Length: 111
Image 1 (cartoon, rainbow, N blue to C red):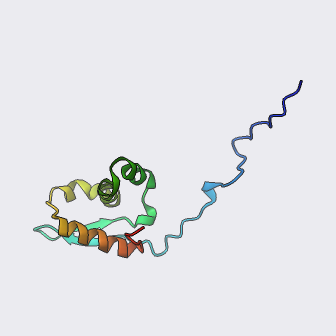
Image 2: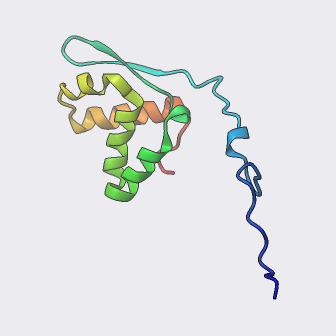
């Protein structure tokens, strides 16, 4: 008896979405720049549209909003993260930074 099971598609056959074909519109995705710390050090955060979403999603599942915010800062600051962590960040400053970054990136924090 023959099997009615369809043959498996080849690796290059896409049925629903070819994610490689998705174009990122990054024309307005300029970095977010801010001054912080006793020496007014300039920091630069990559635009949220360009961040790798996997660590952000994992953080949200693992630790909720607080961990997702922390990982967003880490991912957006990239190599500057270690320097940024050396400066204490009070809650008011953390909130102001996240709100300004979200506004810059066109993200509603309520989402």
